[in-house]
Image 1 (tube, rainbow, N blue to C red):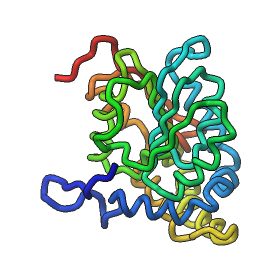
Image 2 (image 1 turned 180 degrees about the vertical axis):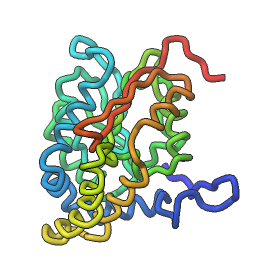
Image 3 (image 1 turned 135 degrees about the horizontal axis):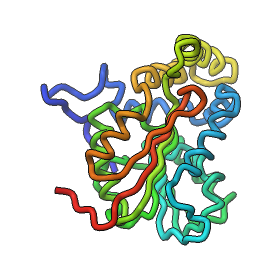
Image 4 (image 1 turned 90 degrees about the vertical axis):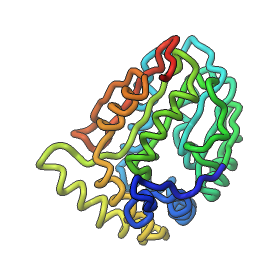
Length: 258
């Protein structure tokens, strides 16, 4: 489940200085795998957990009384979204992540859950994942590591992964939209979080990259438009003054890509 570094229209590798190269991104998260769970919670003041729950609650239809044959958790990390999925009736959860270190942590965690979980080290943009079988696709905090071109590819993949009528929900840390908060928030992401990473025994350089990705990403608004262009219904929502954002929606019944 690997892909070569993608090329843009000029033939150059996509992503500034290779920052979106899958091998580079996997390496970053391998370096953070031992500390990411605790640090992610601490540095977000617990909001990361709250936003994951909101991501699941943003799913358009109430699945509490519906059985889902397949849920796909893309860029799944160590399975941080799984506690929020336990309220759903799921036959199988397929978790996909580039990072071997994150996948190893996820496999250690999967025994804690009653859900049938399969962890696959691989690429959400690859060609090996099942097509037309997913009732639900989710992704928590993975979009920012993709270039704009890679996100456009992802919209087409989500369309292909979902059954007609299937649904999706994505959440991502975002550049705060309020003027009074934006500069402070970006300073915190790019300067303070690396220091906290060092204090807790993590890799400060790797943690510093999270802020760089976030500032470059902005928010989920453009991604919502790209999902609509790919033939899906999508709704955009900001959380906590734009410090995070969600896009959720569905693949219409009978929708066929032209």
